[in-house]
Image 1 (cartoon, one colour):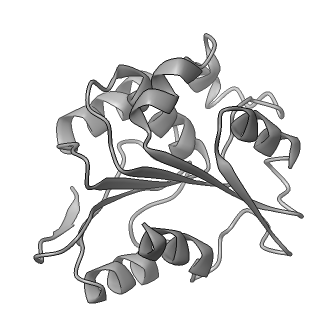
Image 2 (cartoon, one colour):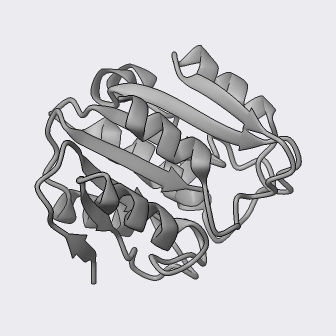
Length: 184
């Protein structure tokens, strides 16, 4: 089930939660509300089997539920970022922007549950072609995603932001993401 809010607006914003996440958790309800207030169309995705995410299932879900165009902005969190990157590899349409929050680019902790997302190299040429403006938001104290993963995104041309003391971005607001979207 997706939470679709259709209001005439500037951007088509797709929100993709992470492992053990959901559309009503963390900053997703807040960001949805703020984007709607700004007049955007928002799809706050509910990904299948969030406790046991699997690459092919999550990428297919994105393919089935996103109608990408040059006004599409995808905001993803945690393993949802890997699902988004894998989705962008398959996309044939360029989108406006991709905002990755606490993004894994490698399985540095060797988690078995999410290992399917990391099989095979990321196809950065395709990702860069389709992602539009690419942003990464990291925290200096994230217990799961090290700052060096930002270097990977930076090498792919992303603009990187490092926030202080935000952990894995499990709080109720995410002003940096809203500021990025408003700047597009």
